Length: 239
Image (cartoon, rainbow, N blue to C red; front, side, top):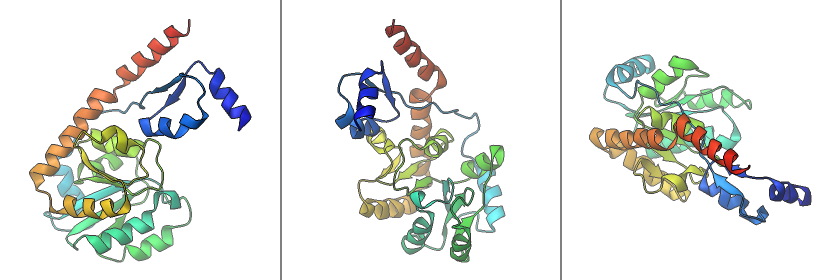
């Protein structure tokens, strides 16, 4: 504790990825050397589209009209994949589908496979590159039910592809996005249930509009150029 506090005090700058992450660290900060610099994300040329949507639904063997929510990340208790699957199944209709993309990190795979025997829950395992991005582009939203996420790269990568997001209270990024209308940002678990219901009942136009605002936010706030510029300005200020 004492060593860490001294380390933070003596640093020229202490960088945080979100405003909430900084807020949580405030008790350990003894001088004004904290700065929030959100991590950059590659904004792809291709974004959410009908071709990838049809390809995903064909792969899942579901109706072309089915709505699909995707969650990307390892199967780990911190991310609550099993709880997410059970909640989705209890809240959403059988015509809506939840797709997990990620490796089995904590021996949760066998339990996930049991849950996936339910018709509207799917686990595709680990996917990389365009295979993963195609699934994201074919979905109608991204969901994180994590207990804690200091930033959540998977969320912003999905936003960059034009997906609206549903973020649990554990996502620190919620504070940064609260006024952006890019999806459904939760302050408690009751909000998550309401978010799932609103996502499922939203019009295709509303989904697309939220997704486009999400993509535009990434272009504006998370570019590599912006990230490099801020770091350069901080380093120049150290002289």
